Length: 494
Image 1 (cartoon, rainbow, N blue to C red):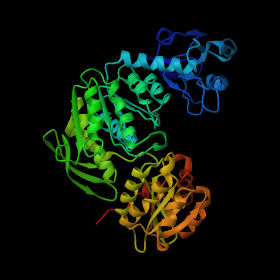
Image 2: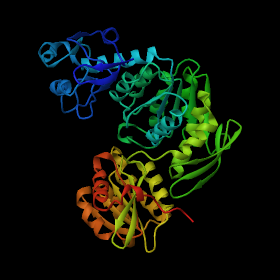
Image 3: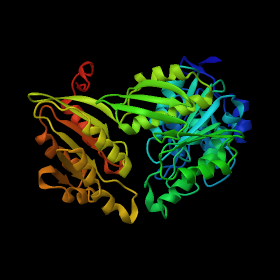
Image 4: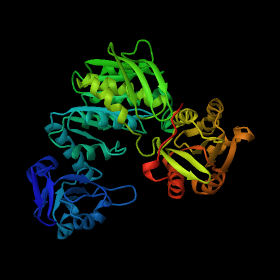
């Protein structure tokens, strides 16, 4: 039901009532609450009618921003009981009990659980070392054309992102898609317990966040935790091509899963790719889904995306959704920002092309991005250029893992590499001189050497962990050279 926000004349669709909020969180609303249409923890993106949760971040306490949130039209602010009396002067506040290290986070988790309990939606949870966000976005894309779909924003996959996404879920949702991440053991268990998925999918297991684990097998065990939250009779979906398939299968069998579906190129996979045709800006997949032949175009490039699309098709089958409609809609899928977005750059004498892979990196995803770059057609005299920043959280093996990328660079015949950071310097020094474009301590220091070397026809791929700030390079390239959006694109393969 939509009601007008009397303070601002806006129409807000009620997500939570006063009684619902108080019952779910154990709190008490002080003041005349406004209609609640959403939930937020960030005043910079808060929308009128959002319920603002004043959680404690690593550097700041959300209670310090309550006045700003209410001033921007928040429906109410969720605050600890100890701070409520003072903050109520700025507008309606929901005072919650002093429970846990962060009472407001506890309240948000409670509200998320209440959202899950009140819906009849079919819920999907996705995790994996590589590809979980892209897979989540692909599921959002195809399912939203078959029913009301609610999915995680960006990569909201941690201890605050999961309950926030749950708290935002409308009761009438038909499909819910949740991304669940981790970088330590036992982090997925409480998150999957909140989501209570009907279907849980693991994309891949790779040496990501390895500094916090004894081995890649331990990472597999941590990913396998997602099955512990499955609803009774739920479906576990596992990559059949992975080296840790049997280990993940054991986790699925130990859970309440009633069924396991495998996907990949393995001849015994339930959802199997018989042929994958890779083109510069899309892929064509010839697959068999539980015995049914399906051929579809995928609007994102790269073998990794094509393989993950098999997981998407496995989910569609498990949900009982329309497989043919899903296959058709995959053609309209575009890469998420920072995960393969492509932009034409107007360089002196012609056009170059930018592939933005700047959202995070690990050895597997960098190798996949290099392979995708290798398939992009360049213009006359054009070169394939990899701009790489440090891969973080790799522990004692970091130097060797960076150096080991030289093999992928050589195999893909990448023409030039520009490297940023002390770890990526290991790769740079392992390359032959002919492939060394430039090296710098930071991404910012790499911008000018890179731009001086760009020329018409080049294809440039930028990738690195978030902490390496490679996104800054993308921003500069777009600001200086991006062609009008109507003219953006990549040359198709002949």
